[in-house]
Length: 193
Image (cartoon, rainbow, N blue to C red):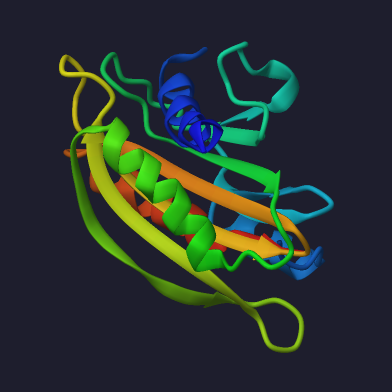
C-alpha cells in the first residue's frame, strides 16, 4: 500500500519539478485538429496537448515509483508546482474490483497528505469492448508538507485483466482555467485498448 501512495504522490510531485482506445487514423485526426497528440502503448491511449512534455519511463529520476509508465507535464513551468498527469499500472488480483482498488489507495492518501480534503468520488464507465468497463474517480486536495502549496488531484482508476491503472492529474488550487481544462480532457481521454 505504501507503494501506491508513493506512486500517486511521488510522481505528481516529481514531475512538477523535474526537467486505451482505438488505434484509428480518425482518432489521430481529431487530436491533431484540437492541437493534441495521441500517446499510445500496447495497453492504452490518451490525448495530450501537443506542447506538453512527455516523460518516458527511461527518463524518470530514481525517486519515481517503478509502476509509473509515463508522465506529462505542462510546458509552462512554475517555480511552485507545475501541472502534470501521470499513468501507473500494477498487477492486481483478478477478483479485485475497481472501487476496492481506488479505496485502498485513498485510505493511504488520507493519512499521508496534510490538510487532506476529499471533494468528489464515484463510479463511471469507459468505452471498452461490448459492455464497457466500470471506472472509479476520486478528487481531493492536500499538501505533501507544511511548507508546500495545496495541490488539487483528480484520479481515474481502471482494473482490467489483472492490471490496475491509476491516472492522476495534479495542479495548484489556483491553476489557470486552460490548464485545468487540459488536465480534465486528458483524464477523460484515457482509454484501454
